Image 1 (spheres, rainbow, N blue to C red):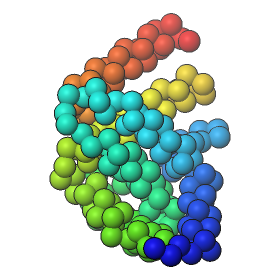
Image 2: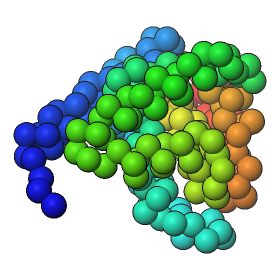
Image 3: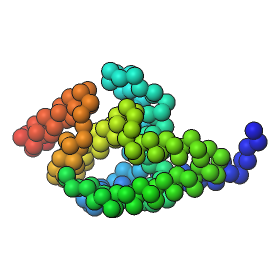
Image 4: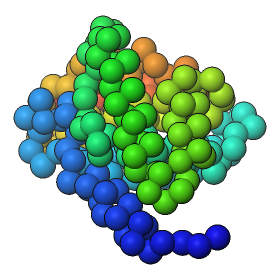
Length: 194
């Protein structure tokens, strides 16, 4: 297989944009120095890597890790669009975002001739048809709650909306237990005015 280094170089430059793309929900809440899409993807990847063997399911760890990184790559093209607040999902906006991200994934990965693999992976992730995709979205949500907890502590914000949204999505027992522990810590923080 002949590789075209110029195509890979262009691919990596495009991916680098995720390091400078702030997460929209945090910008909306006026968080100082909000995390980027790449920072979110990094911790989601570490969570996936370390938890995949502990969740009690037969999980393809590599697939889960790939989902962790592919998730943010479509946003490099579309931007980070918020489609859910509390328990309200803007379905037309979500569907449009998914279609735009899918086109973005196609545009990015066709540069390095890996379109089929990552386009199929993206579809699997969006459609939540496999154990990995269902677990991925719960890990992604848990990471958001963890980040909200840190921002509340560091910046004195009330980010209840993020916890309420995550509460709706986490079902996997180990993730649920960690989320519940995070909520307890959050309650103690408020009681002690830390």
